[in-house]
Length: 249
View 1 (cartoon, rainbow, N blue to C red):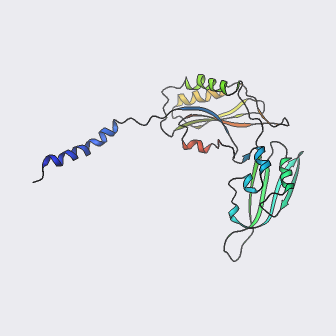
View 2 (view 1 turned 180 degrees about the vertical axis):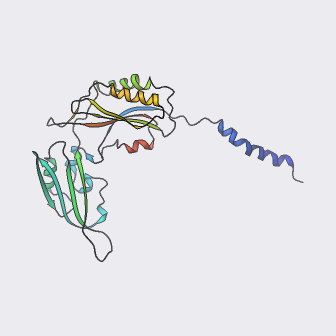
View 3 (view 1 turned 90 degrees about the horizontal axis):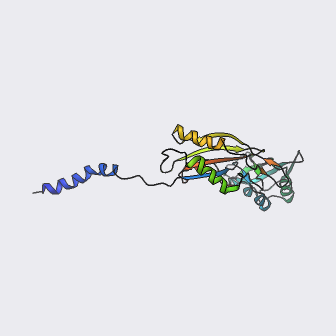
């Protein structure tokens, strides 16, 4: 005969599992407070431009394996306000194309246009076009007065110390995006990802709105340029961070 106790014991354990799981604390997630630059989708440093030898060096997303044969590759850039272009028939950059990009006016877009036959097994292939634009990043980024140390102190005083019961949980991130203008002023702050609390969202926005002027970003020739930044608060491993393009191409 089956022992009733041997049946009831596992049944009791099974029924109690949901109750025990309710008593389990969620994983502790450290809250980070950071201000980082938001890069344009396609932008590279001057050093990367100088070392570029092929189209994929200019754009890591460039689909070189789509191409069976190039018909033309044209680089277009502005020098002293005048648009110039140089064409080749290869994904490898010619010296003239490299010189054109190096001499392009600071802060202006450089465009690439490739006409090619696709790499497939079709008997009849039409010529396709694949293009993109990119910008060379300034040598000197915008900076908060007093540098990183003072920026961290400002965020501690105006964000961290003023948030109420802030706990977004694992993989959650609140984000405020803003622009540092050519005059160093903080412009267009907006909520990119909410904290899900109106009071705390207002704290985040006010902290950005009340920022002092920054030193604007500039090229070595003195050309000033706007740059976009983001204040992120929460779990730094959140996928939301991937939507911001916080890493240089």
